[in-house]
Image 1 (spheres, rainbow, N blue to C red):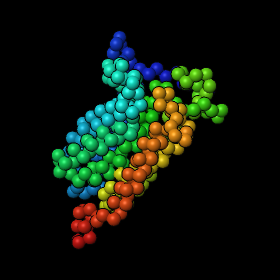
Image 2 (tube, helix red, strand yellow; image 1 turned 30 degrees about the horizontal axis):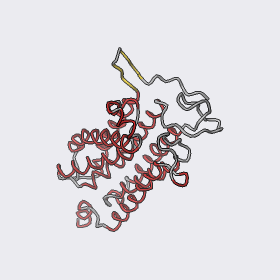
Image 3 (cartoon, rainbow, N blue to C red; image 1 turned 45 degrees about the vertical axis):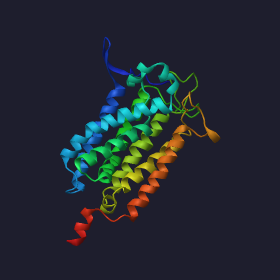
Image 4 (cartoon, rainbow, N blue to C red; image 1 turned 90 degrees about the vertical axis):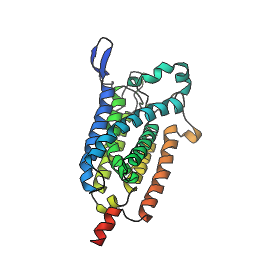
Amino acid sequence: MSFPDIDPALIQIGPFAIRWYALAYIAGLMLGWAYIKCMCGRFKHAITSENVDGFLFWAIVGVIIGGRGGYVLFYNLDYYASNPMAILQVWKGGMSFHAGFLGVVVATYLYARKKKIEVMLLADLVATAAPIGLLFGRVANFINGELYGRVTDVDWGLVFPDGGEAPRHPSQRYEAALEGLLLFAILNILVRFSAVRERRGLSTGIFLIGYGLARSFVELFRQPDVQIGFLAGGSTMGQWLSATMIVIGVGMIVYAIFKKPSVERQKEIVT
């Protein structure tokens, strides 16, 4: 099958262009923000809608600086060292989720401390919304024809513009389905239970493990970045970074289970 003829630019007038890649990231951030605002009602008296409004800007900065900076440092440092102006060309792709997530973690911690919000409460809310951004981010990767899969003979394989003549796994679609839709569904179901919400850090741990497992699996079909290639034992950089997330996620769940319930829950018990 041939790659669908999708113009990366929705509208272009001279040098000015509105690209699908940018729109996908904007949609992911805005819908994630709206979802967090809806979830605030489930965490009574703990966080306000105004707090979430203020956090949006911090999250955007964390995603851009973390995601782009991580890609430059860990995936293609030699190229960007020789072409520093290319670092600003984010519309051409090149965002590291793992580093972007770390950027959001830093933004979450700093904003929570600034507004005197429970850090793990805000982290849990962000974790439940993160798959929305992942879904749209993978759609953006597909439209750009980047991060495609390995050569395959499956019926749904696609011939990507920059991937040679052989059909390849549309790994961006796999990631959108697993990291985006499935992980969002799991978290959205679990967070409906008060026992999950009361254990601060539990949703974050589940997200970390869920993403790490989904990404590690899809890496079996995804073509590694040419400048990195395969690592020890045929593993990939994405799998190593995801393994770290899984370990941290397990630690978060253990922390959440053995930590006392939130102050909100303690008040409910007293009354």
